[in-house]
Image (cartoon, rainbow, N blue to C red):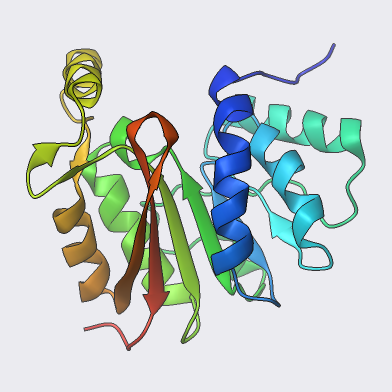
Length: 207
């Protein structure tokens, strides 16, 4: 049985995301993708960054099966089998295997998970990234406490109805947590459909 899953949004946002990733990711080193979901982004992005190695991950075994199925379908040399990583854990599986990471990519996670996941993401990124390592985030955000579009406000309300712990986050809050983990906000890029690309760089030891 084909375990590949499909998320239609990946077809719409992958090209704009790739344009930013191609510019901001380090020219060498391993790339860890957190909350890879179906794996459609993984198989699309990885070939563009060879010979750099792309490591997908997801805490959901159903989605890890999908990632692996997509990986097998495309036979991409620099795309690895998915790790089981829950960002809230104190040590990630990729650390346990001694794999150094120069960049982390995290797409559409922070708003569909509890705030604790954002805290865990920043703690882990601050822990495993080297100096000048890059953390790339993509998704909808509020700026200065305000939604960037009325559609994002409606989306936020819909998310909170599904789960009160979910919701579109305030970018300044995310950046504040990142800074406490030694990650400095470098750039915010306006993306299609009222999303943002948010780029952090490891600039100091954890405060």
